Image 1 (cartoon, rainbow, N blue to C red):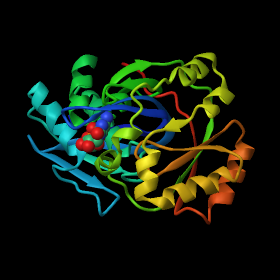
Image 2 (image 1 turned 180 degrees about the horizontal axis):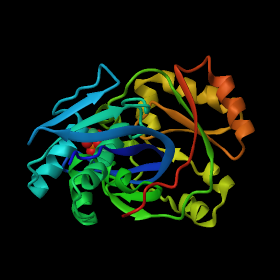
Image 3 (image 1 turned 135 degrees about the vertical axis):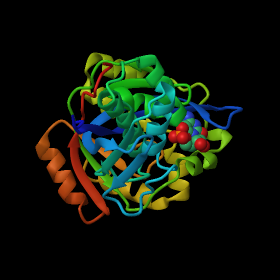
Length: 291
Ligand code: C5P
């Protein structure tokens, strides 16, 4: 019997707050962050291939389809963990901009784990999947479940939070990629917030307080990102002119603004069309949840 294709969506993420609290001996940084899934997503489709073969195709010609692509690595790690001899071809249709602070690559890796569990009919061993995810990248464990969650450690230790109230989200990207490692490297010791307190944001989320969420948006990584790429600050300032609460997501360079009405979001998107290379209107998303 021919094995059916399986498709899986990989949702983008933003960080509503991201406080870097220390530099670690292993080169990573400790942080406290609130991750939030967005409806914007990539689509992965899994189909059978020759035994032991893992191959990848994508709609983005510049994207590697080999071992340095997290999707390929995720498939190989899962295959090894479960001793699977079957092969798989993965087609990746990307909509999320690459190296943009929106977790696209991390989410593709997480969707690969979820999709292959379904495709190969493996058990849902959540803690094993979380461990494999954490080896793939700091944001991959969050992307496995999505929704609204607090991330600590290097971002891989998760606590689910109350679902965020629904927001329209306008994303604006200046049209260049940013290396996460370079942004962390440019962060100076004096800019690390060892006593970071994110309780105001957590309380606003707990209370479903939209205004409180908007008031407490904050990201330590804006400091090094704006220093290295002043165009990101210029874009943030342009977005703020629409009256919105704006923040850079993750290590950038995408900036986002949250709106409670579609009318306001549409107006902001229209105002930004000429100021950014890529502007996109999406919404918050409730995530996949633990299966
Ligand atoms: O975990 P991930 O592979 O996504 O991280 C990419 C790079 O970003 C790391 O190699 C590290 O330089 C930096 N990073 C960090 N602290 C974190 C997450 C990432 O310094 N919490």
